[in-house]
Length: 71
Image 1 (tube, rainbow, N blue to C red):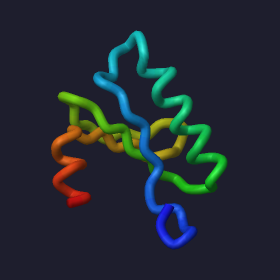
Image 2: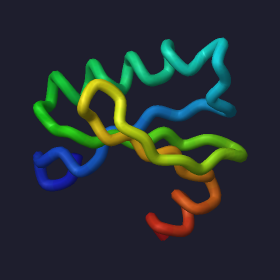
Image 3: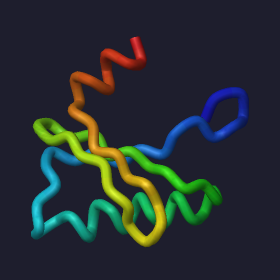
Image 4: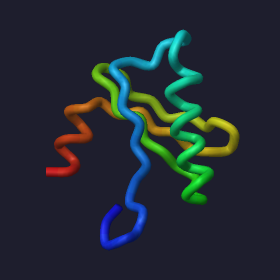
């Protein structure tokens, strides 16, 4: 949140694998639906990706890239 406005929805995990992908994305999708937005961000240690999930855009970003963007 920034100035009482949603800026970005973020989920953090070390790595998205078939074993944890559904769990990690499900929580993010719940937040996306709650805040009535259509995008979310997953920050991971070593993955970069972008995909659609149930009509929502999910971007996966390397942690160091995310940190470089916010500084």
